[in-house]
Image (cartoon, rainbow, N blue to C red; front, side):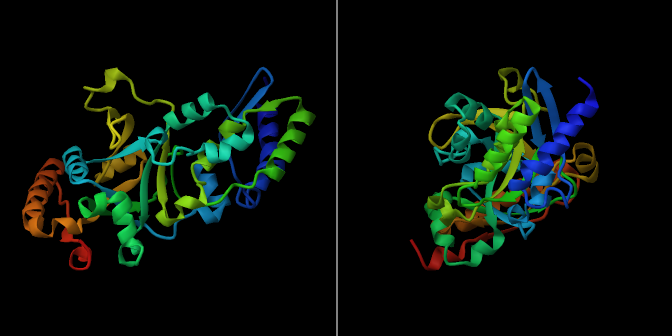
Length: 323
């Protein structure tokens, strides 16, 4: 297959099909991170960077975010010097991704395979900490006030293509014109397009309006590597497995935090640092004990990194207004 032919097909697909999902696909020059033809099947994956550049409504306006976890989770984050991004088979919404892909006719097995390879870190904009909705978020994701809210700074200095930081849109993705133009593309080129490849990451960014209270922003890592048992005792592996909060076996990706300049340069992954740890309001009586414990871990983290690791530790202000 002549490479120029695939490039011509890709240009055709972006300009005549994807334009109906990314209005700025042409002016902002959307590009593919991978395309191929196998028999009569055409596969194309649009780069994560293109998603943000060509559909600005997905782009967060902040670099500061909040992630909720348990005290045990916070302990693991400091000990592992990493955040765990769990794959989409471990999230609360049972219709995750299928909310969009079902309209393509995707099968349950296809959807599960896609969810197996997409890892997410769920967050909200840090401004939510000072809004009235914060109590609901503590109830939903902060163990009812017994967990921890971690304020993070994520600096996008050029992620690897398989990372993207994006807003969740609580509405259906309108696929009518996309599907119509996709069918026309298939007819004129005598090909079948693997639409799952095209829309897998986009499908992660659309959820049912029932979940709108979350105001979620996601860091997404899509990977074909995944977890294997041989990686369990490999200290350099980014993947692992454990039991999630529903006692299901979950696969996760370890994202290093507080990386030094060499680590950022070598890996081109998001530069993530902890700015503040807010202890849940249910721990008001034990706050000093918990704070001292995390201060000790912070010092050990500092020694392990051989450079300063700074963040504040405070009690949620809801401690005086809710119990």
